Image (spheres, helix red, strand yellow):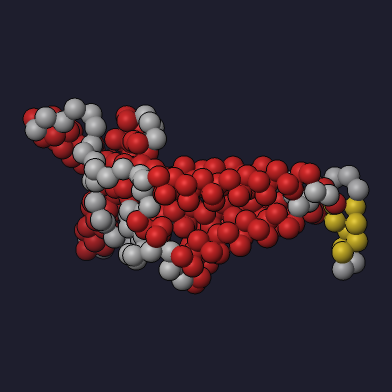
Length: 254
């Protein structure tokens, strides 16, 4: 399942985060993100502590800062939305560099910026230290619905296959001098998309029948049989507990 697109976020290293069991990392990431979301927006120091924790974990995982920054570009749409909030917000207004801005909009923009950035950072760190098969295994161990994990497993397994099929169809279109210059020539593209859907559906049916004939019972085999140790859970609990304590202190400390 190590496709070129599927494993693009993963970085092969030998750090402690890579050796951590996937369900431990999933649970810790979820609890950490929840703590970040629960942190009050006025507690600037609390967000700084969260950032320091993520910086330490990134260094421990031996992930380059440039890699993290490039992957964080995915949050640009959210940041663009946050930029407009001070201009369209209502209520009390303040002057910043001669521009009238909504105070409530400024607070909302800061909250989105801080929480989205930290949440995306934590997700990137999880993906960079855990392979996709192990992520699915971790979801199974956390009692995630197996029907959903099976669907996700098939999706990630065949994403590259479908992408390659579409690439070949695009080559076939170009070899037949297909150069869409107006909306009237979009029919061929629509037909190609329909053909891709039919081929993918038929392939899925054949693969499913082949799996049933080989004893498929609705669950995918686990890549590893290892279990999380006490020290691993203790380290994860320390990270999640620190994040929760920082969030709680943010409400108590003015």
